[in-house]
Amino acid sequence: MVEFRRVARAAVSVVLVVMALVTPLMAGASVSRVGQDGSLAGITAEILAEQAFLSLLNEERVAVGLNPLAIYSDLIDDARAQAGAIADAGTLFHNADLAGVTTGWYTLGENVGYGPSVEVLHEAFMNSPAHAENILFPAYDYAGIGVVMDEADVVWVAVVFMDGPPGLADSSEPATFTPPFSDDDGSVHELSIAAIAAEGITSGCDESGLLYCPNDSVSRSQMATFLVRAFDLPSTSVDYFDDDNGMVHEAAINALAEAGITSGCGERLYCPDARINRGQMASLLSRAADLAPSDVDSFGDDEANPHEPAINALAAAGISGGCSADSFCPGDPVSRGQMATFLARTLGL
Image 1 (tube, helix red, strand yellow):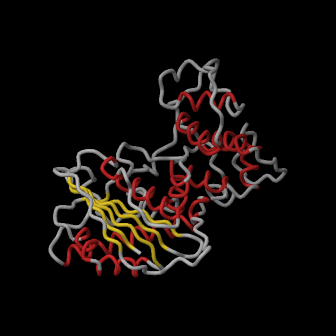
Image 2 (cartoon, helix red, strand yellow; image 1 turned 120 degrees about the vertical axis):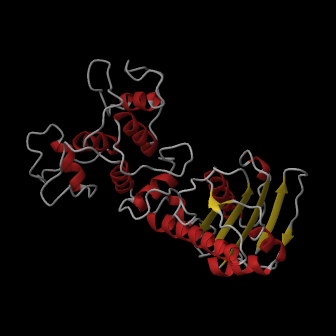
Image 3 (cartoon, helix red, strand yellow; image 1 turned 90 degrees about the horizontal axis):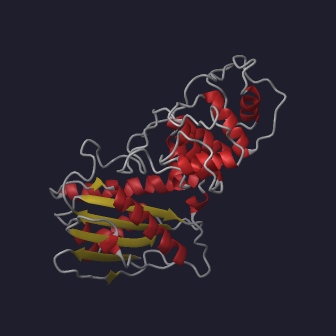
């Protein structure tokens, strides 16, 4: 089943077309979302389905001489939210606030539907004049696609189209990257990055929401925010440190101190801009996750290191296999990609 909507800036109008069911939902069928628990399998399937939809849309557009659609993060957020809403409700409806999903648009459109597969849904869209018109609307420049796959293997999709000013998407990035981020394709940490993004632990490293910066080192302040979000640590009104005043991570730093996970780097100092190393990461993550200690000495390069007990606890829990067969490299910095994997393993995502 699919539905279509378009909103034009000049005269706000709504056109709604409802097709016959592509695949009817069975009475009582579960609409629990595969990826809603943050599992890598569910998230990966939904992300790959989003990419498949985008590829099919752009193939149709290029075939008739139109520009391919570029990804715009504002639209992705809305499309995923709408796909989740219709999946949870078990029925199709449009975003009542489609006009408010972003600013600066000239025309917005939305297709929603559900069916047994990406290919069947795309064919249904193209066989419906109104939906095909949305897909092949010449003025559209951007798209956001959200997919939810339920336990009955039904694919729920929302596609948001936009005609807007140039420069909203990074022109150097093709519209073929795997969401949510454009700079982690091919990274060994990509699935973990997607998993922690789905859990709300990260929104990336820049305002566009398209970049994660997986190779950048994690700062002590960023580490605080990662841990507070991952373990849902409560906030506090106590100001523990003097060198983080006014920082975006200050609340998370204080929450970490309140939970007894950090005592800082000196008297009333947290050193928020310092890069965190792998040994320090092990201690902070071990405390936050309350990992059981281990008597097994897993690595040979952390002897007499103050973080050795935490490093062994991480190894025993299967969170880290070290940086080589017998080494943990406790003094090395932690990249954002590595941090995503550490968190995903710790949380069982």
